[in-house]
Length: 152
Image 1: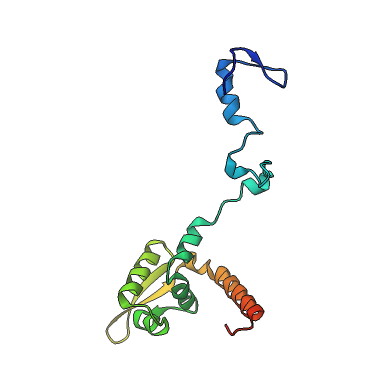
Image 2: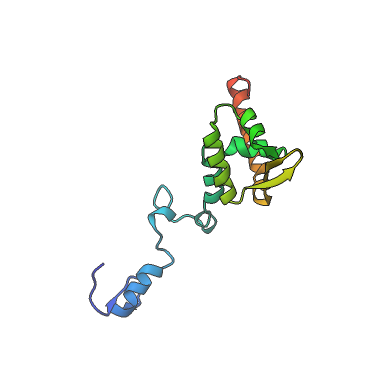
């Protein structure tokens, strides 16, 4: 934007070199392209403040995360139990995904001794918070299946 120093602005005020950059960046009617609707009009405040649930979406979006979390939602499971119920996952992939879910704080591991040393995986508080999301995904899947007339 070019202008003469101390040039009048359309609203009748005078814009100087000092306040031009500040008003340009912080003017209430100026929004980034991401904050504009399809016709270029500014979006309402409630719409502009919505942020995608990126961390939860990242956890659930990783391959095998939803099946693993779904299995653990019913209670703690040993590695071999998870591997038996999750058809098609290799032990290496299951191990890597469980480690990653542990680092994310979604899955925990508990050691116990029945006849020897064993470990069981369980959902942490953070993982348990995903149960409503899993239920909602199942409901959507069922609705789509009914619409397409196929079994879930």
